[in-house]
Length: 459
Image 1 (cartoon, rainbow, N blue to C red):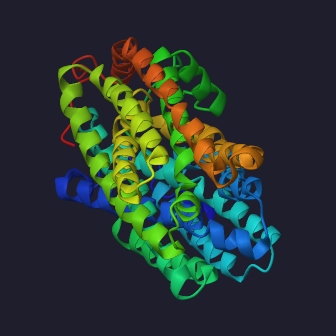
Image 2 (image 1 turned 135 degrees about the vertical axis):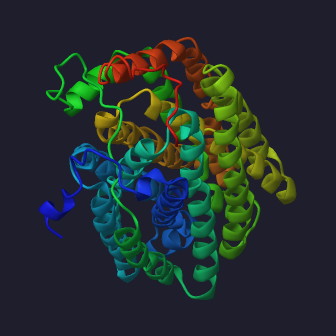
């Protein structure tokens, strides 16, 4: 597919018939959520098979942390800005379809690895391809849903995280137990081709809404990454929301990437038992938390927008408490119960955090803005989080033996207290940030059409 084809649909100045219909918006949301599920299946299925990979290639926890974290997150971060710029300039549906095929094929290719280096190179390429997925999808959703329903829409979209984790751990655990870890990669890569074709056949490129001038004359706005960064830096609300989202990912990442090895080492689970326990304990509970968080944030935010970051501050405390209890209890049943509470708390933050972030940006910078956010998430959260735990586990191995992983994870989970502090700080500035975004949108409208920032369209 050529770049000219990728660019089709940009510059349309009126809505398509489908986009005006409510059912189509929800269909588009469902399809994009499936894309995000696939994203997380391919991204996290390796967590379920870390122990078999460790034994086959004789790896340390530091190497496992590198493979499960930075190997994916570094190329994800490097490709993030170019992918975000593409998402702001070309047909996002077509871009998304192309990169799905790329990352799915590379995932399947990992199954033929004969060395740890081969696995690393394949995962590097998967990370680079996946960098364009979320900026494209979230930018499309922000154009399909108004501010009043955006947290709900983002919360449903972010169901892709717990559902992808559920499928990834089930697939990884059961297939690895029945066959081997190589077959896991083959099976995980196949659905991407089907989903890519479904996108091309049934989804249309949404019209970009709510242009922001950034103090430039109409039609001459410069939405380069530097301008987007400058806009974000001028907004205290955006800065604290970004800090909360990123550090929340770090704190949960220090735990989530290592739950399967922890259950196998400290509770004697097999690879299949660990995969099933995490899929049911974290994945399904997390799916419930994602929906609850988005709906609750929209309802509380309609009364007072400060409740949106406030809700995330509260759930941050739940995450820390549940994570500590999960890691310290000796009974396996209660360990899974607290894992469920941990998953609910983590997932409740997705919709409010990402929905608020999108609402504080303008349509023409959402692709770049989302790319910047996910670069930070990739490097600090998904990258350094697992690496931090691996390094600390190896460092404490001589002192704590098999429990070194337990205490390394506990240290990371406790750092989630910083997440609560960041979201509490965001509460002080979020009204001003939303009002500023509303004034910027009104600059692009005739005076007779300018409305308050909570005046929703029919999304």
